[in-house]
Image (cartoon, rainbow, N blue to C red; front, side, top):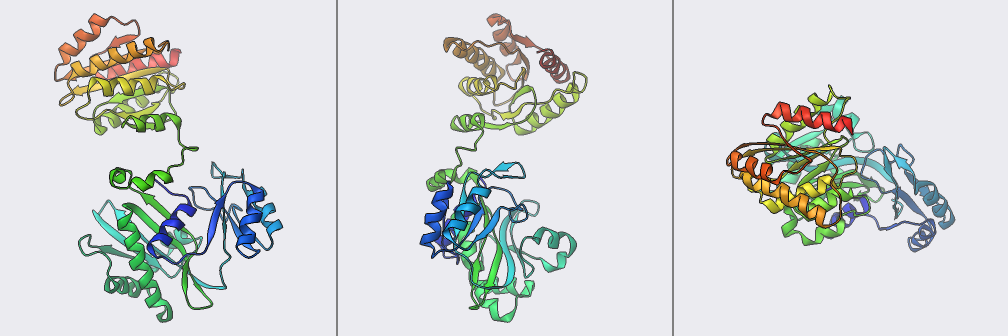
Length: 392
């Protein structure tokens, strides 16, 4: 889960990373009041979960409360790389900035470790620095059992060649930033820029945080970070049912058991769709390795509730998830929707193979639902689902 800047700032402050004062608002008039509380001038910053806000005009200085209102009026509602600005942060203006640095921690999946990154060339163009002059970006693996002590932080600072006058202060920030990373179960914490100001101090002026949603069970406080207004309602409903669901842009609903099988199903449907007007998969939905009939029913209800879906392809290889459970789930879901008065008009193509496949097929045959078609090969089922979607 990616956080807005103001949420990242709050986490940094909680763990002792030096930040400037600020508050988030969603109306221009509130910008006036917030700026007055900050002494009469502020920085108005668009809150969107995408980079490049400054270059897009989403970060503006305001010298007076009235100017803050004007800046907020301009920025609220702005589109930045496809993201509409619904909130802005009214932040304290920084003291004179002398230099801008970059520091971060992330989960390095490729090398199965944590990685610290640091550079004295921070600011808006850090991506360009990483691409064109990678030697300016120090990358230091971090042992998960040892973490980042002050000694480790000094090693990172030395490798990144920070100036001697700020080296110890940056090392202290690295220690507290690591504490944030671990305590909050983050996948990424990033400060850019970490600014050296005229007093000689360093301050986190902007930051990014991405939290591990799999750790939510031990992080109940993270619920407050969920952006319910921006969440896809289908994804939100699926999450409430503990379903692994991602909305896509196509027309063929996909249900499978196991992420590998579902990914393969997406590919097969996309390929088959080329022969049927270019239809594509409408979603990723993995019901898991031990899904019950109830889980199957929940998944099917979510997909059938997607107005973009024209047909559904249920592709199951029975292992831990037995095919008769899947078949019962399909029958139950169709009955559940009928009981709710929600007419099911979208055809389902079902391919069952593996554990209890014959029993599952018999359950579907006995139910004799007019919208359910059995196809016993993956390619054939994908082609039929694409054909039915194209015909709707």
